[in-house]
Image (cartoon, rainbow, N blue to C red; front, side):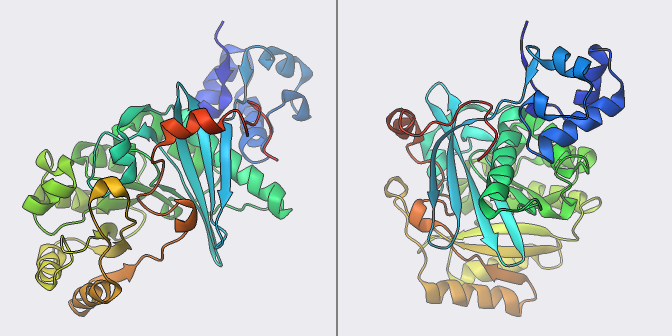
Length: 368
């Protein structure tokens, strides 16, 4: 008999599982709260569950965390965890503390198949999709580990961004129940406005997300025209910019925010010229309600690219802002531990074999 990892079941799935055990729905709600709100992994800790239910769960189910290969903390407070997902694969999650929020960046795949030119993860290649339990385990571990670290019973993570390794919308069947758990008041209770899915532009799945679970949406744009974007984001050959913007406008009908965030990685001499800023203005102004997030590029050797100089980023932002586009320049966080945007999990397959023997946490352990 297969042992079920309860981290992979949203509340509806857990209710169905409890019914299979001959239990009523309210037992699923109790169990769900113990796992996600309190971080419990041991059924014996769940004191308001009937002893008969705890006995049924023993041997049939577990709360199985991911092995922690390593943890690094930046001088700015950013924390990066490397999680073992088996067969030599590892994924990373990053916690970014700010004065008014705590944001966790989560991975959805081991590697990435999209292959954006400026992304370290894409250069690693694609291994496999994560399952729902592996996605939510990153949040489960980080939330309850940080509560213990900070000595608080209050929620530490207020925002989740699906911007780690992988293209979330190419792993939709696992992503959807994970999002529902993040939003569920019996789980993590996050606002739809504070959960963001970032995509390189998988148009049909943007429409699916709009219908199934509309959360905040961020789109990796990075170029003002199809010719350049195809060089930087190969997926543009399948879903060109015009189709992508149409999907964004459809999404806005149900989005929790009244804008789409467009991510634009600033690449020296590639996409940072004044005329390209003006082309971006003409592309977006009056066509889609949006905010622009300019991202300083984090160089890595295989890319052959450099970050735009600060003055050029400032000039680019000024052109957008003067045209009426709300524009921000992302503050780089965690770059001293390779946790900044685009840096996640370079060479993790090599690192897994080296580090896993030194700092492995036991499977299913309550975060400490």
